Length: 217
Ligand SMILES: C[S@@+](CC[C@H](N)C(=O)[O-])C[C@H]1O[C@@H](n2cnc3c(N)ncnc32)[C@H](O)[C@@H]1O
Figure 1 (cartoon, rainbow, N blue to C red):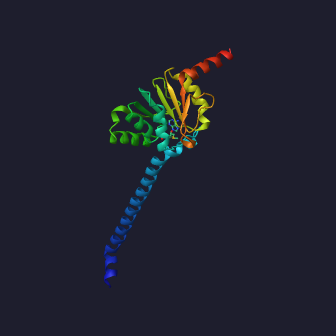
Figure 2: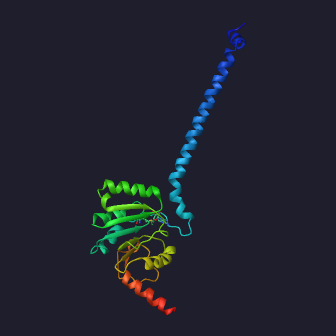
Figure 3: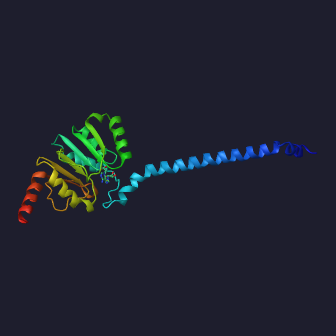
């Protein structure tokens, strides 16, 4: 009888075969766990970036250019107080405004961008004069802000115009980046092409709102 036949006869062969099967199935479990875990992690990171495309108004993450940020700061130079960037992305406008003395806040739907903004603000030493909130712009109130910045898309500007006109105090200024508001008349603009920003005075759009309401009565 050969050694192999002897091993089979004594049951040692069966043990080796089943040990081999066990280690293969363990490897299979580990591979499935790693692949599954990676897919879940990828989904968790990517979903908040893709989600805006599935909303009624698609407002994707497109960061402001350096010239755009400079134009925002230039038109707001004489002002102070509270500022909010609606859809604050990676926090660049909020952080730049805080460095110019504003108490600056960012409102952003994407939690990854909010966490990254908080980290950036801390790294750049402006965490005390900044705050970032995970929030839907359509559910937030802007009544507490005296300076509002929006880099939106044309499809949302008419609806946002109505919301801001109803909520903002008369002392507020609104800065629109790249896309102007459809009916408000800007008091000035700065920059060219995609870096253009328009400034609106709440006193002006409030009085236009009241005039229009009176017309419809
Ligand atoms: C065009 S980016 C502007 C980013 C930033 N303000 C800047 O200028 O660099 C618009 C941002 O709005 C965010 N956003 C989209 N829908 C939103 C919503 N409903 N509420 C709050 N933020 C939203 C997007 O995730 C994106 O970061």
